[in-house]
Image (cartoon, rainbow, N blue to C red; front, side, top):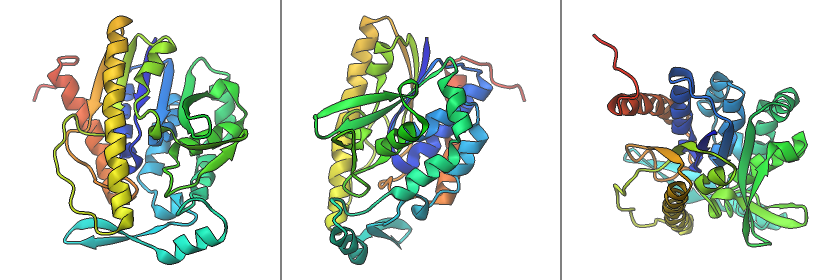
Length: 303
């Protein structure tokens, strides 16, 4: 069984989409299982449907308004670098309305439902491929994996949305009596789960560099500090997931093909920039192409 696993990474999901496009269209890889965390969960349904152009259009046109119904921060560009500042009015409004988070992401749920139709959902559910998204159950203190085979259209769209909710900046969702948040808080790269579900060869798209290439600048405000702290924690979780995945693969005779980002794409994956994400998609495609040429999996074209 062949599986594709796509990690979390916010706007960097555009790079992952480019890698997946090359693997599926150029190499002809056919996957039985798709597993995604956070932004990865947004990609996998459309990849399983072979509707790569459709999801590419979404990823290369999305902006802050597409995600946030109440955005808790402002984007400031100084000397070519994007920084975030607190949107005090939006944060106050959210707390005044009784929210437990700084911002709300209900627009993302609407985008998911507008992008994945009921007909497409039924085709996937009745088809041979399994689509699984990762969520974090804060009430039960555990990671959960939600398969398309077990839920209705509305429920599965909500699980995709929940998998992407980077709390406390995005919505905290109460469902089935529990509070849920971004799957990346528990498992950024669900390689182990793919192997447990029977995968023997895995293409793992990791939306992070293989080694650390930068030191973070000093935090400018409370939000910048929070995003830096979360980025640090998620990076540690991701590297632990990869080590566990390698260990489990070795003991189950499974093969993992890793696709890391070759360079640092952004230091804040909550900033959605159309131009950059369009370039990242192409970068992902070209990176996968060159990596496979280097591995001699395909012969380079003769000039």
